Length: 276
Image 1 (tube, rainbow, N blue to C red):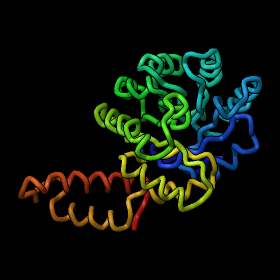
Image 2 (image 1 turned 30 degrees about the horizontal axis):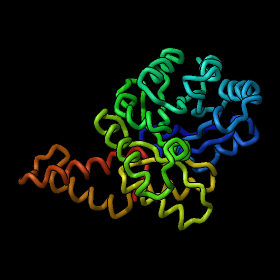
Image 3 (image 1 turned 135 degrees about the vertical axis):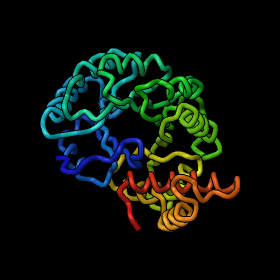
């Protein structure tokens, strides 16, 4: 069970999806290196098993367990059953709304669960990408996440970085314009370490700061590759020392963007509880 205060979800890097029908994995995931655990009531559970899975999740979150939960799309009957089962549970940290395609869907989810429950809007379709800013602008939306597999099925896009660059870019720009944290990238399924690192370089270069994970073994790479490095920390500290937290040492226009970046790095380091 959780023994430490969870990271601020706005800065969480690794988001581990666990099938809600595999109750034996709940505690294992909780003890993993994942920044956040998501119990999956959608694609991770076949339709016939969802009622039992809901009861298992509700029981775990009513005890000592704490996690996020991926709920079904707002256009489905399962969505209503999901939110009814989760409402008011003490261990519910938030929900990931599958197949988000409008701000109204986030609004309806928040209305049913309560304004204190944050929503990760999982964008998985062409329509969702086109309405990304509307979705990101909802008060309940904490972050956007990219459902890359379903997006590819919906659009016929390939898996290459160039083929998905537009979709990733839309989520990043929509998040920035709406003033919310950077989005969470879709999972990399390969078990090969080098392949994961290459994929995480794309995630980072696109301006995304989190990644969905299907296996606990992948979370270490995600946490390392999506964290500021020791060199980043040293640079940020030097800039802040020279220019001042309040900008008192700013002498030219080029100083301000450097200070802004340095302060962002320092904020992330503090939120992630990292020191070098």
